[in-house]
Length: 315
Image: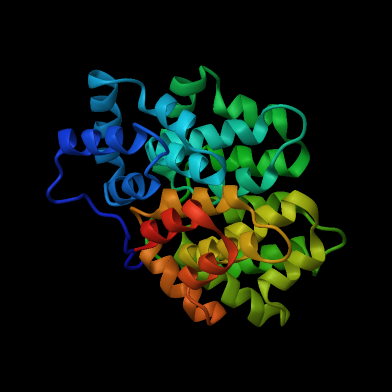
């Protein structure tokens, strides 16, 4: 979508042996040289970090175990996240969101409602490889009602991903949405779920415009009024992603830093996972929307090595 700019690109003078020696030196002796670890890992692509992890294991020890014993807190979590590919990290986050009592719906929504068809296919395969479990079955077992229906529809991975807009269909869909929600008696969620899960993003944008002309209400306001709970979160995410995925992530980052306390897990997930796709674009939109740069927001909100690492990833 659009021109997505990463902040991390493959390091040109990559020398895996030099990097593993550098990390080993940083972890040896009295105290850990966190800055050295940041300088190496925040300037290597995920693929290069995989090579570092493998080479370190071959030559010395399990790098993840070494770093876990040396580091603590959010800094440790973020560094460990960087040693997985974004795909493996995403499926670990999905599993974590569903394990144990209660479900972290926000994480499911963020990962599944922003995924492309290809992402969904890779999630299913990778989830099985990493956890030896069926992702769809886990989602079905962990959700219920309309949320389950919507997420199951998204898990089919058959969204139209073309860039074609059919004005007639937009009008039909907008009318159906209106009649299913504001214009009807009670809300018919299956209509909303079907349209939001299957149409391409440009088509949805045209539908939202048409919806506003028809009803005089912005689609997001209609969703706020007509739905609640996790289903509302899913719909809002799908609408925002259809309008602008990078702005959706900028909003998530802002929300993670707003109010008392910081949601470090969300900061790690988005900043680490988007760094090689569109974090530069997310930064631009963050500044545009909140009149403060993402870096300044992180500076105010985070501390210590964790802050230094996130700022290094943001470049």
